[in-house]
Image (cartoon, rainbow, N blue to C red):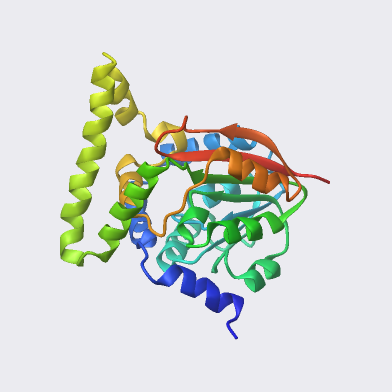
Length: 280
């Protein structure tokens, strides 16, 4: 009989993008300004003081938002299925909070029910753009919900369901990950350029060329992230699942969560963001 850990590995190991390698590259361009922007975005959307609260970063990736939460005073637990992502987060901890006992970093899978149970519950469970890459999004969301303490908050971001367009994107992502490594950079450049040309074309069609330029020059001000590394994540990020805002809202309501804030991408390409509060 398979254990929950074995099932988690089976769900994520077949065809998978190397998220950690992308985050390793991102750390090379991480600046203090980006960290400040990450703190600001986390505070604004959570609308909750983090000082002294327990914060669980599910799929910590680069570690940027674990760092932001710790700088805001939270006791942080970070984990990721991808070992390179764990290494990135450990590197940020070493740089900014070396030896700090209020921030722990470890490998682990949100699909591993035993592992999740061992972590206990938290005042804030944060998982931005992660659960849809596990290969079992609804199971991952279920287990993330269980980790939220009574009266605590769940902050998630999930890819928007665009119907046929999402099916098309899934094929693009899967194709990228099945290509020989030598061909992947060219594939990434072609589709990355297509995304940029499309965004520019929309701005020009609206007679607002500055809209595109502002998007490029101020991208890091949104969450402290890098546009290029997010594009790499978007084109390569696989497994890949999607959901409409309505389905996510209903799923969480059935588990005792009330929406505090919902920020959608307007039915377009991107992630819908949700902050829920668990009923006491």
